[in-house]
Length: 150
Picture 1 (tube, helix red, strand yellow):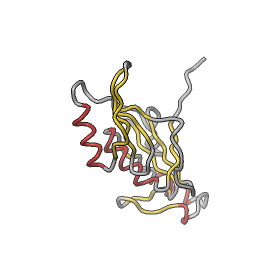
Picture 2: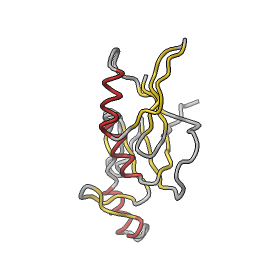
Picture 3: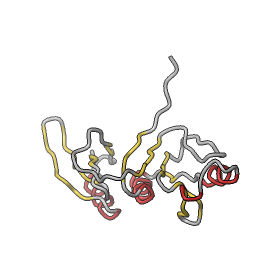
């Protein structure tokens, strides 16, 4: 079997703010879908109200994505073909603990510095964990989604 391509999709209320946070947090690149959007608008295949302008370029109103800078991407669409997070707008706010979360691995001995850096980007410390299996910090992104810093 050929391995499947995948992306992690995260529901949120502000996809562009989430993409900006996670791009800075992970060192990823925000995807630029403007060429695809312009083509679809020109063909009448997408309505103008489905778009907005972010950082001086057209973007989808309800979707934004980030990708690993070393992974391939389609130049004609701007979509990543490797490690990728897609943020999609949903009407409801987060209300319960995530069933899936990211673990961010800091360099050896750099966990606290990484936690502080993430806090300056808008993350918050939820709790610190020390168990037989190891130590980590549970944090939340600006919309309250949990992630761990190992």
